[in-house]
Length: 249
Image (cartoon, rainbow, N blue to C red):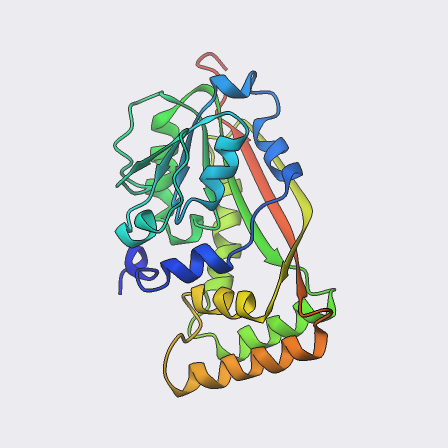
């Protein structure tokens, strides 16, 4: 299965179970870019639009680029979000037309060099590119226990791909200025929400006997940690933002 098709049967769970991103992380993306309402964003690998809507809620115009039709169709519409059936490597966007390029929880699925070259092509001089990830903060006991289940049942090493991708993005030679920050992020959920999160994860089994075992363990885990029927997943939202520089420097 290609990377772009990994989520075709997980789109509804993705929309229901994936965490949002904290306001402080969004602040870092727009800082220094001027009036947010004048900013045109290309959100690459936009999925079901969780990040695209957050960017648009700031007042920016957002071009949500997503190759997977099922993910696009699961997206909640927003008047400032335009959906584009393109990829990070071939966006179809104009040269030097974009102020801010973002990739939320997606850069590891891209062909790195091709995607980075495409970012440079579509960014205007002085524009910015940013990669943003929610990663578990396993100093929290419930989150650590959930992480143990992920490692027990994972079908490939996608989490290592994420780490490697973040390093590759930050090391790209075209960037003139680089900043990294981490922001605490909490996701309160009931057990159904935790199950949806697990089902949305492409490297965890969704069906069959192994998936039944995983889901049973998640229910037991949530039962141990729940307070008034809810648990809190704690994450570190990692932001790496890089500027392209101006034509003369």
